[in-house]
Length: 108
Image 1 (cartoon, one colour):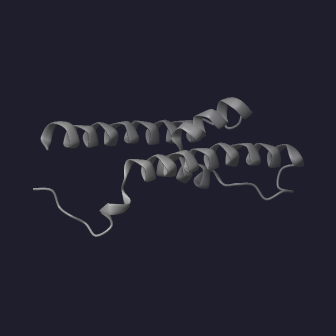
Image 2: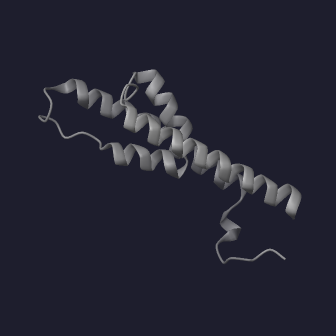
């Protein structure tokens, strides 16, 4: 028997899709803004968007936008620690998606 949480009526497919579109657009735009700030001046002269913030956006659903932003703006492509963390976020999301699909379509 599934557990009914008080906020589940907000979790409609349309709301989830809207959220994912918005967070991916924000993630893509954030990579572009950070690239622009990186090219704006010498190192340390401009306050940049932290790698932690970029990873947070990817973690909370913006992974597609993060990868698109990396490719489109050629930003953070050679930073190995950042790339490894981004790949870990992608793998985690794929695993969670698989578990969610299993739960919805097979276990229920």
